[in-house]
Length: 208
Length: 170
Ligand SMILES: Cc1cc2nc3c(=O)[nH]c(=O)nc-3n(C[C@H](O)[C@H](O)[C@H](O)COP(=O)(O)O)c2cc1C
Image (cartoon, rainbow over all chains, first blue to last red; front, side, top):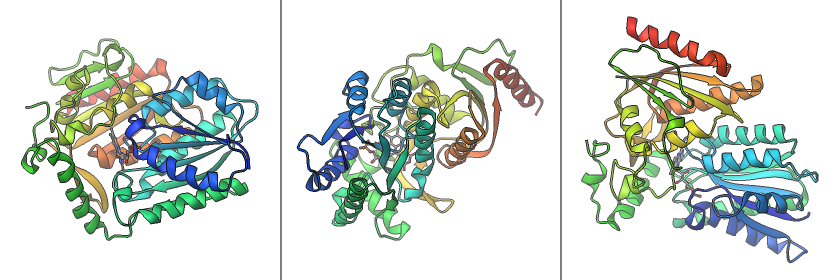
């Protein structure tokens, strides 16, 4: 194993689920790491592209942690990938990903991973491993959070051992129960702003 | 109504009164910040008050759309992708089963016949990934039918004209 750079691709990086998934990854990766400075973490909306690219020059693994946005990679991450393609590091770190999506099916993230693979091909970087997380918006708030943690641990181990893994995880619920639970999740979310179910259910767009 | 969204200015199309043409490159549209305000604070309305608020109502109202975009890594390139991410106020927070998968419920959004005119794809693999993306979009963006046409930037305008002319006839 070697040095790893984690890049958070969420448009709300400081408050993102991606940040939490990255923190879990760090914990497990650190446990097996030999160097204190082995992990560096950046966010595409907070850090200078040049600073991230500089760090990438000195790593063996590059891990993108991002949310699914409109069936693909968030535009804030897309913009960074375009920059990195123009500043490809000579050391050619291998690229891995943790992608989380709001919907139940982790399969919905597959296209975004194909995009990341295309980026790798066009930039000449090897693609290594990935973890797709379904129910990603709510997973860590449930008593079943340990299930996603276990997968992230497996990913950390795989990277440390230089193995390629392709994994996915979601809440172990029937889809109908997921739908019910998600309704509760969003109602509680809106309640904090004094917004009712009826208001959330509005058919109006821009007030019309 | 009909809507043409493009990531570069198109020449005059001579379209009918029922067709809106939007050049996204001329608008000021910030990227989505993922706050979910449009679902839980001001349902149906984005908290960022820029030009996106003029575009997503048009997307909702249209039953026929043409989207013209450069392709990058099998994705829409930044201009179109930024707008599509900013269109989530037209959906509700609530999730339902739709064609066997979990998807958000929609507000007053019409089902659409979509034509996606894509330029700049570098390989058959990239085209295949982009096609998959549109297949996924069809669920979340309510495309009742769709066509993906790959072309060059030079020829994109001509294709738009041809596809829009079909609307005028039908
Ligand atoms: C603009 C926007 C688009 C989204 N598109 C999708 C989508 O296509 N599929 C999906 O499952 N979740 C989608 N989501 C949900 C996010 O993937 C989900 O909330 C995720 O947990 C956010 O992660 P983050 O906190 O790391 O940004 C979208 C969210 C936003 C704000």
